[in-house]
Amino acid sequence: MTTLLQIAEKVVNTAQPGEQLEAYVSRGSSTEVKAYGGEVESFTSASSAGIGIRVIVDGRVGFAHAGTLDEDVIAETLQEARDNLTFSEADEWVALAEPDGGTPIVHDHWNESVATMPTEQKVQMAIDLEARTLGIDPRVTGIRTSTYSDSSGEMALATSTGVRATDRGTGAHVSVSALAMDGDETQIAGGYDVNFGPELLDIEVAAQDAVERATRLLGATQPNSQRLTIVLEPRMAASIIGITVGMLNGERMLKGRTPFLDRVGEQIASPLLTVTDDPTDARSFGATSVDSEGQTCRPIELISAGVLGGFQHNTYTGRRSGEGTTANAVRGYRSSPGVGAHAIVMTPGSGSLADVIASVDNGLLVTSMSGLHSGVNGISGDFSVGAEGLMIRNGSLAEPVREATIASTLQKMLTDIVAVGDEVEWQPGGSGAVPIAIGDVSLSGA
Image (tube, rainbow, N blue to C red; front, side, top):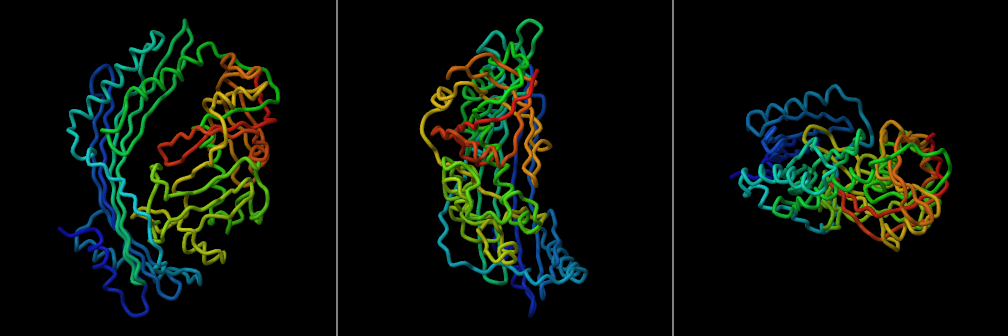
């Protein structure tokens, strides 16, 4: 059977004199089951494969892709990429990556149960998750969705400059959205469990998560407007830190579209905060040996004790900025490499979430935020999002609140971090997050 790497190598072996040639090949499959009322509401099983080809001559690039690995189509795609090159403008920084001589830390996150577990068992997991969620607390009277999903994917990369790379991985996920009622009041919240394969999933974790989140907000009212300390659960902290890391993207730096431009080496956050993009951490669902240009991945300390360490780069942004690649190229076969994080990891501090809460006299435990994409300005850092959660008084959780807005700037929030916990929670996207507390945040309510 022809491997993906052999397909890629066959393409790049046709490179013409003066031409750089790259082939990125991938294939994958996925399954999704949605259950409702003890029955299957929907079932989807899909597979895909494709190739993306880049041709570079004298700083001009041509790109084309195809959603098949048919040999004749690949030949047509290569010709299309060469044709597209004639329409592009020269860019002195455009060139393919070279072999970096690194020794990748191999992560074979391939769990065979994604392929070997019978479909009937996957369906039953979604049905059982719904039933279990309904059986925990009588106030949970309905389920919006109960879902099982999994995926597998593999890639291969070859270039005429000598780069050869392969990677593969699997993932599985169960999630449920619970509806809790108390009189006329209704609250909806979700829970999940995620792992590398279905045999590693625990529906009890997802069910308990959803029920706790839905029931603890029953009776929520709008809080009074005030300034206070907010405590972010790990998944909420992951959202804030993820937005911050998104502003440390080399593409945004080159365009001047980041509030942290020209601040490398400066204190941009509390000394309590250290954030690393560490694709070598095998615990992360984003762990990988090489980036999508075949460069060896390594830990990149983005923020060290509050000091900005640098920006993330692929080969192009690294050349143009003069900083070199940080092995942060990301892509699918349909596109040229962009820049992105692999596995954002927050360095743990001290104390559990309960300990962080206990350290706050007047605050809000934020359990959900809405409007993150529209409420955070990626250039100025202005921050204004909807929030729900539980008030904190004298170190103890108090009444639930909703219909509130928390506002500040991202820059101020980072510098006003007053506590970092030590309970690491791994997120579906690959982040390893811990609870944090941020002081002097504006809460707008009644």
